[in-house]
Each structure stands twice: as C-alpha cells, then as structure tokens.
Amino acid sequence: MRTSTIIITGLLLLTALLAWKLCYVPKATAVPALPAQWHEQAYQLDEDEVLRLIPPPYSPQRTVIISPRMPPIVNRGGRGPIDPFGFGAPRRGDVMAAIDWCTGGEERDVSQELKTLAIDADWIVREGVTQEGRVATLQSVLSQVTGRAILIEPRLLPRPVLVVRGQWKLVPLDPGIFAQRVCMYVTEGDQRAGLRENKEGSFDEFCQYIRHQTRYRVIDETDGAKPARIAWSDCMWRQRPHHGEEALIQFLSNLQKQTSLRFQKEIRPIPGWYAGERSPTTQPGGAS
Image 1: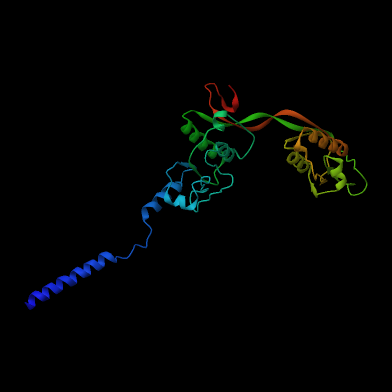
Image 2: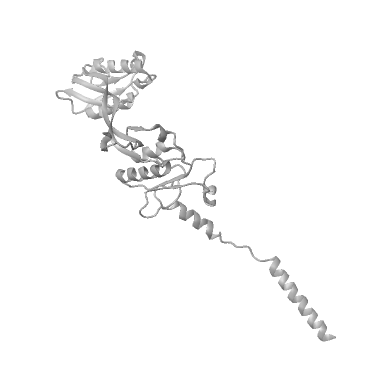
C-alpha cells in the first residue's frame, strides 16, 4: 500500500511539472529571421545593379517603415537605411521623375505613352552612377515594362530662348543708388519701392540670373567687350517676368534701356533628351 502511494505521488508530481512547462514556456525574444531576410534581399542592390523595381506584395518591414498610403520608398545606394523621401529619385507611377533622374533634369521630349505610364513598384536606385549607366539601365527597364523597344538619347530640341545682341553700355537709371548697377524690375512701382537684394557676377552669371527670372535660356550673341564684373539689383517686389508675356516684354525693355543690349525671343535648337519608342528607321541622334 505504501509503495502504491509513493508511485501515485510521483506520477502526480511529474504531471504537475509537465503542466507547468506547457503553461509557462517563456516567449521568444528574437524577431523571426525570415521577414528580415526577405526585406534585406528585396531592398539591397547587388554589386553590379543600378536600378531595381520592387512590386507588391511588400515585406512586413516596409509597411512598418512607411504607410501604404504614402509614396514608395527609395533606397538611393542599395545599402543602408531606406529613405522614403529621396530627393530626385523616382516615385511610384512617375516615369517622368525616373527620366529626370536619368538625364539630370535637362530639357527633354517624352512620348505620350511614357508620360502616362504608371509603374506600381518601389524604385531602388544607386547613387554615383554615370549618366551613361543611368540611361542604359532605365532604357532597358522601360523596354521590359512596356514590351517595346524604348530609346533614350540626346537630341537637339527646338525651344524658345532669349537671344541677346549688341554692345554693352551701362546707362544708369539715376545717379543715386543705381549709378553703377542694373536695376531688374517689371513695373515702375516696384522700381520706386527700392531693391530687394544686390547681386554681382560675370556677364554669364548676369545672363543666368535673367534665365532664372524669365524661365528662358539666354544665348549670348553680343559684340565687343563686356565688363569683367556686373552689379545688379533685384527690385521685383510684386511682379516678375515669368508671370506673363506682357511682364516679360516690359522686363526686357527695362533691361535694354540700361544695358544698351537687345533681348529677343526666338526658337533655337537646344541640347536635350528624347525618350520614347524606337521606330524602325530611328538613327542615333534622332535622324531617320
């Protein structure tokens, strides 16, 4: 009887121990490795890779890093942290941004098909790649996505420009504050209001400032010598030349009175890029 009691007690203790282990097993503290490996494998470029498109479904880590409602993430380097707002990198469905990344934001003509093409994917791009490498890679990717032979190449594009001619001769507005300066303004009211900021630079820098204000490239066809340094003042408080054709004409007229130079809008061939389907007769440089 005593032996039976000991056996029964032992069985009860063993049962209790097993029950405790089943009910109080400590929870795992490590994150499962599989989702992390999935994410790393998908979002890290290989050594010889320039661009990768990652379509949904996305890894669990991606949905933690960025909301599904926000634009796609961009890892601009292939290694390191994911950047959801990578400047200059393509976004979901925005092929034009991809072409800008490829061509450096220069003038471009893009076919209607590519303008409206939407690619639902994250773009992973590598920094530090030559323009030639970016062009070749994007051309290949877009050809695969569209199923057509896509061409991205430099071309001369007809664009409106400002051609400046004549000889430089400064004619100051008044002998006071603008005695040695060109005053950039559109309306007389802005000119009387005084300067916003002063600038100084070479003639090329002077033309670049005009380009920035007018949104037109400036072609220098002037004659004779130009000053090594030019000083100018921005007096455009309310209206700027890119606000309309009338504002542009008045702005250029004001410049002509002070510099003795003539500014004329013309159509000229400008170096740029073409992106579209390759036609059977397309030759390099746009010839056919």
